[in-house]
Amino acid sequence: MNTPTPTATTDSLTTATLAQLGQALGEAAANRLDQIERLPLAEDDQVAAVQRSALRQTLGEITAAQQRIADGTFGRCTSCGEPISLERLEFRPWSATCVACAGR
Ligand SMILES: [Zn+2]
Image (cartoon, rainbow, N blue to C red; front, side, top):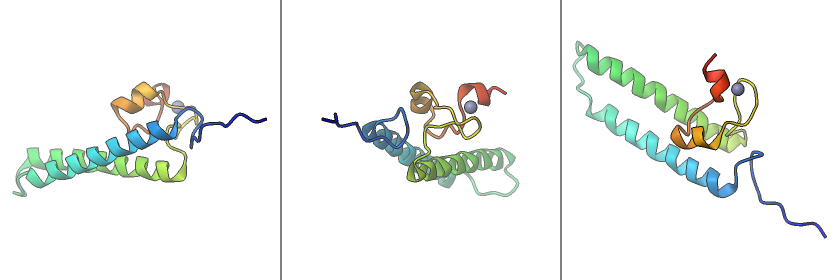
């Protein structure tokens, strides 16, 4: 008799955890979009321009993470391929690299 193995798209993340992180990503994206909309639109507003560009960058990282969930590669470092710690993913679900690679 084979014992049923829990469905996981990566080695360490369960379907439930993945769903939770996926939801967190969706909320983070909505939150960034909301912040971008609230920024003043004046072209000479340097502070707003910097903030807008930082928010767009994060949005791009969030979209990439959502794509990795769809691909089944989410939770793995895009640099070395090792699993990213759950602690790091919970803090920043769009993390693309593990702590070691991020610090390089
Ligand atoms: Zn790595």
